[in-house]
Length: 401
Ligand code: PMP
Image 1: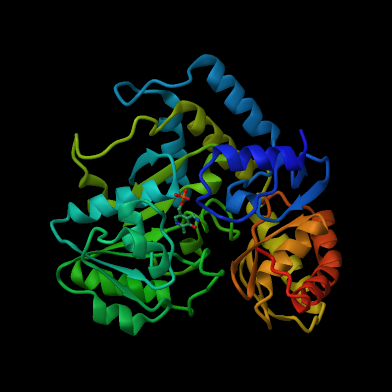
Image 2: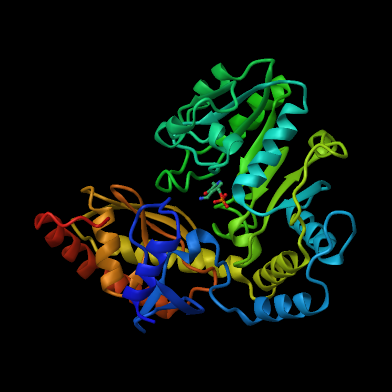
């Protein structure tokens, strides 16, 4: 099987919902991936922040293998141990009492938050422009990207979108009928946009004043990605009512969670929500392995250290196409001085490094949290050539997409 063969089969059998030509990958180990032609890549996409421990981490392989061999699935009619243990472990890392609802994706985790919001008896919701919360209809209603919403109107209503990072606009939008405010601590899909200092704290104060729930979407920022268990923990005075998680949580398996605290944890009543695979023991066993490995291997410190090395190394290049680097830990956006990011993505792939381009001028990095010195050095060493190549290709009129 070659890249070409697998691509042709993909085109024949799968819906082209993402549209971009795909790279056919067949194997992964740590921060490395191989395509069907045998070419090796350095993975700085991490399955869009999913592969927290990299590919084929022995702890995940062992946990999943043991679990599927003993108890694969029981349905929500019964209790299994892995979801219980994972919920307990998650709450330990939050450092608060709360309740967890497990599902299969980030969109679903936000659907859970949406329903919890409506169960307050209020209907209005506030979300941010440019925010991304998923593609199912409720999550899409919260997503602040009109182009993604437009073909599917009408969406569940009564959502106001406010400029991200603007506490005054947020205060003006929140009313006595506002059920929830949903915010990403860093906007990932919008191009790794970091809000001004004090924004989350202001959001907490604004929601507390009217009784609205503060929902933090940590699907991309959570599970160690920014060097904290959850990014909000880097901000003083911010205790959210609901946190949504997915991506890194499952270590490569589909796993999402809606975690609620205080009165928000008690709103969902029997029969009001659910999904067959929610709390699947195999996915939860993987989740436990992820959390334990992050703790045991000191990966939060590694994220901080390698994140700083990456940022400093990229900035020190002084390359004319690099404006600055933004983000936190191992969720970084290289902001370019020209809208060359899609072309740079392709140039990087040609050079054996996988990155992505969430905005025309932003190259996003989300490598595994296990990233070592070698990979960071290799990336920094290759970046000038990649950007030069992108510049040249762009001049040729060649598109990266
Ligand atoms: N929230 C955020 C912040 C995300 O980045 C994403 C995915 N990019 C989602 C929600 C949706 O997650 P999923 O694709 O698992 O539905």
